[in-house]
Image 1 (cartoon, helix red, strand yellow):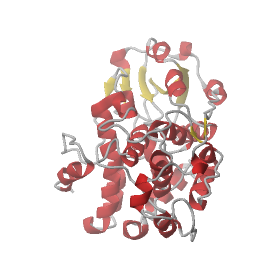
Image 2 (image 1 turned 180 degrees about the horizontal axis):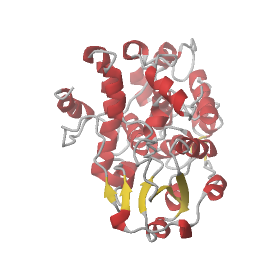
Image 3 (image 1 turned 135 degrees about the vertical axis):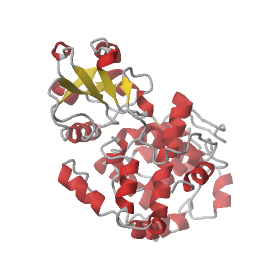
Image 4 (image 1 turned 45 degrees about the vertical axis):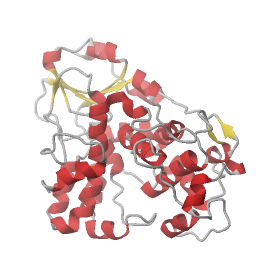
Length: 368
């Protein structure tokens, strides 16, 4: 499982999208998923671009499920834009039956839950920075519903490792599983996991009915909890960072970790700065693994003449003149100054976000 950052490899991955196969078996761990999410998260490719590329080769009917799933990501982003930092707290409901508010089950941290598919997923999360969405749901279910642990602890741990760790998708997906952003908690038993993970494990603490799992006390193996450290190493960023004194009174086209679109800024105008600004204080609040940082830096090298500044927001923007500052739209950048580009919405005709994804999707379908 790899995530190359060169232009040719990413283009090949986009070209290979098969929405028919995706619709047929996307829920299986070995299904025909696109593995494009890290590039979407970091703004290399937009949702409308992927939609249009697919519709060039396939009909709307053939592409329906693929676009439906893209809409989930847009929905989460729009909720973030609407709710702001509230998405990092239980948004609609209080999580039920929480016994542990700090740390994670020690068996989870050590990748020894005894559920083979979940332990494999935890190993893959750390090794590759990626796991299938179904595996993410199962891990969240284990933490929130089975181990009765606060959802935020697990979301923070997973975000740190995921190359595609989008704050809205990650936080709100964990909340959807925990029942704080949905009508009830999601739960999967061993039979369901075996089906989609292609395992045959039996006689586990998940090998019972969903109804019993909802009411059962915490299995002994998940009762011990441990704190976990999310080590953030900024040495790579410090070594890449430019000096503020190098910023002159030119136009500044400022990129972020979420807006690494190589097609955005002018390529022929030499009278501009193109700067990837990485907020040191933001990373302290939402740390990322060294593998994530390396991926972001490598992806950014596709942007011609791009320089990097790593520091505080106050330091960076104090050197910039608002009238000469340009940036892309993103929910993470709401309070950044400058002239903002138009949002790249999958369904720009939908102006309001209702309480649920399905109500949002019904509005979107009219524009499909």
